[in-house]
Amino acid sequence: MTIPRGTAQSPKYQRLAADLRRRIAEGEFTADAALPVESELERQYGVARNTVRLAVDVLVNEGRLVRLQGKGTYLREHPVLDHRAYGPTLAPTPRDCLALPSAVYLGEAAEAGRELTSDFEMMIVRARVDIAERLGLRPGEAIVVRRQLRLLDREPYSIEESHYRAGLAAGTPLMEPDPVEGGDEAVLNGLGRTEIGAVDHLVARMPGPEEAQWFQGGPGVPLMVQTRVTFDRRGPVRVVETRYSADRSRLVYGIGDLAARTTLPAPAAPVDPARADAP
Image 1 (cartoon, rainbow, N blue to C red):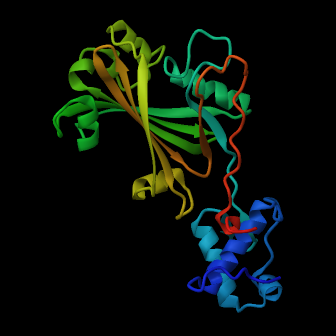
Image 2 (cartoon, rainbow, N blue to C red; image 1 turned 180 degrees about the vertical axis):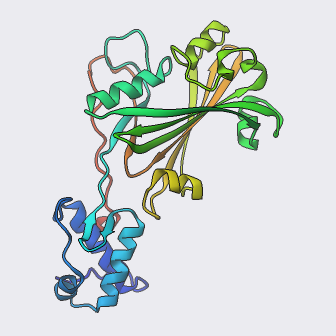
């Protein structure tokens, strides 16, 4: 077995890591069996032990592999849950994911045979510059943040924070440190601030220390951050920032008329960078 040439600037361990990614993508290794030990990889590739160790370190840092003390190196696999982030209703129902997002999460988890639980808290904080701009406030103004920490089968799944103007939330159940029956949407509807549209901004970034500790991901696993600004006919209503660990979540968006479909097809698997230049 040989290591792909790559570019002249690519160190040998990086090219070895790329070939191991290829083998993982092709299903050569399974989650219930350890990868070949370092001495076997040395023999397969004809390289030094340190080269193998550095290549495996790269994949551990990417969150693809995990070393188990005394047992070996295994694939680090998390079941991926598709979340219908936004789009036309796919099943016969009078509500969609904008009108009742919590029900969407619960339905998706149930369909996947997984248990969704959440921890809840409410905070009054100073608005970040980006949140203030989206809500039409001055940076540093007081806002109400309602946070949900969602878990799937007791594994961290997402952190969701809904940001409200203090004046909108004052004197309403949005100020309570508990979930609201019918969801925050029921409170907004009662205030005459029914959300009718939204704009999403999607970015990827590395987690901060507290986020990394909560998600328990690999040191090289990024977060997907979905920032949704919702609107009614009077203007912005709230900003919902949801952070997902990229190795266990996939956001699905519906576009156009989907009346002929009952479900959205699963997105195609991403192209493995290690094979992007292959003929």
